[in-house]
Image (cartoon, rainbow over all chains, first blue to last red; front, side, top):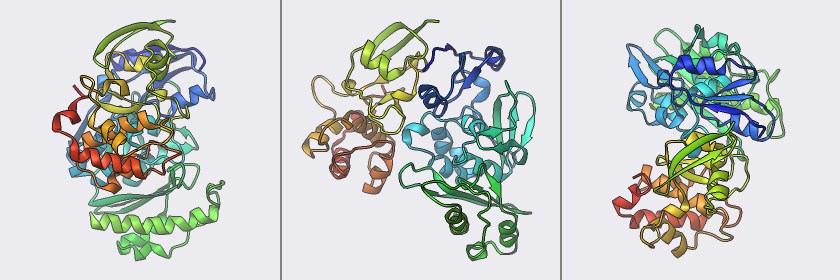
Length: 265
Length: 164
């Protein structure tokens, strides 16, 4: 690693001020930033550790929404009695991220700001139609993910919390790369009283929805409604692990499994 | 810019002036000479460097020492009590849950954390719980056997030992 300054402020205001320097970076769980710094893929003059900022913590259910502070670690979402009761599909998704050691450190805010194409949380954010709150504004899930490792966040803008509407039922299922265990395809299916949403992660540059799957499930919420729907492989990720065609084929299969999991509760 | 990092390691208060980019694993190994914690891949994958920070298993190669300021850290050296091996260490010995031994400290720290979350795991839960630890010798069978054995031999207070 190249040398950097390190600070751990305990208020949001102090954290924003501390990061307002050239090449300053917020440090959340560090599960991506630290490996990138170690490999010298990234160089930062200053790291602002957010772990002491109280405004970024806490999980609450408010009316028909679950609000999760940006510095909530994956294990906290997985174990939260509130999330388990109101949004069990989200608790299970959090419990399947990375491995236990990563879940003990990684945060929802860090994962979303990073927008790794194979990350799990973007599937939940777009699939449930969550709202991302930053220090400056509220951003709808549809406007947040802009590309591979690219989001709508401006320089110096920090995610403070994520607010998820509570669906009637939802589930996230992923097909893991057998070696890295990252999602080659992950699908979040959510049934609300007035709509069904389907979001796919791992398959493209960033998470995306499948309108024809949503319409089919709106007519009949059953695995059979999507199992035989085809997905275009155009623009899907292709690498040594899977071709674009293979990923396209996986989407229908994993979506059907997600519907079955949502129905099983 | 040097910073002062103060924390408790295996029950002992330590305070050192460090460069901010010092990783926790390098602090443990090079500054405190606690070389039981190993660096395997150094890319956050293998889990040989797992230690407990405030009772939670973390990869110490992916944590700055500065991030552990004010915490209680437990390494493999801190598991024994009064010269007696921790039940998980004892089970790794009795079930021969190792071959070359390089991954063993991380495996044992992960296993202790796993059994704290789930004191009576199934074999499948043990295998799933070891997702963050790689062993290139054993094929995992005796490691899993050791953890299942430990789960039947662990008094409640041992499960809590490294959290206190």
